[in-house]
Length: 197
Image (cartoon, rainbow, N blue to C red):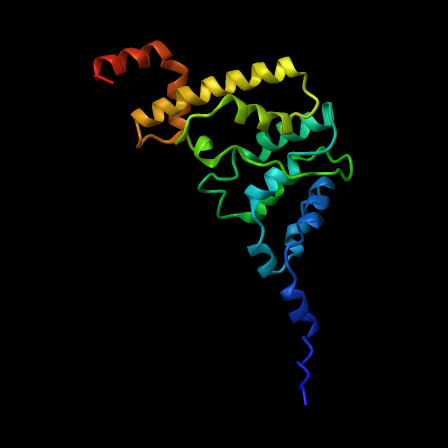
């Protein structure tokens, strides 16, 4: 005869619930700064700020609303989420994501795939096709000629940074970005010629 499993107490049931991604996105759209505080410890452990930036930044609206979400998530959350002091405060990270929302009600958010991780980390040079495919998803409805220009510009900039990252493997990404602003392609070519590459 089969034995029944004992029923879970109400508190235990609550503790076993997963982090609900879509409820979290709705709470961010509503600018519900206190929602994170209602989660159990187990649910909080399943909150992944980086993943949330990708969901929240993409709305299925073209024009100003779509552009606002992308720029606001970058300005209010993405730039600071991984600061060593902020990383240990998930509730603060939550509030930064809420600050990125314009608070105009529920939106339809979709997942935007990343650029190849090796490209993002400057371990490989970007290809124009890969960048163009990515930007076509991020900026849906962009005119083809504008998409071409943005993709070409990003690819050139990323390749420049990739070359500098190879030259200075111990340098931080932020420092590589700053260095790329002052070191020209001509400077790199001259350096490689002088070093025999």
